[in-house]
Image 1: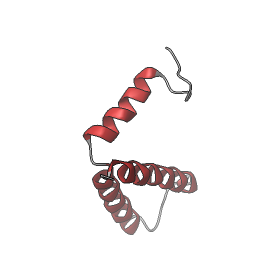
Image 2: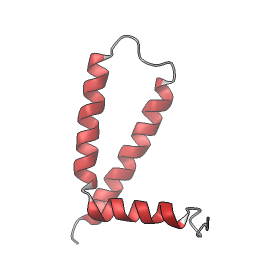
Image 3: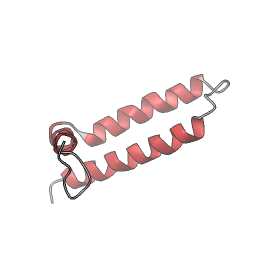
Length: 75
């Protein structure tokens, strides 16, 4: 497996590029937020112990999707 200067394998870099080019990051972000917050509303009790870690990961994912969506906007 070859790693480029970003520290990503070619396969992973290609998958990220494909995702950003061929999907709507803004739409994915919006849909994931809807599902995530609906889940939270329904799971007020009994959230997993590692939920703080899940929140951090979701925030990072949403921030990535927001940047990807912003960069895809026509200038």
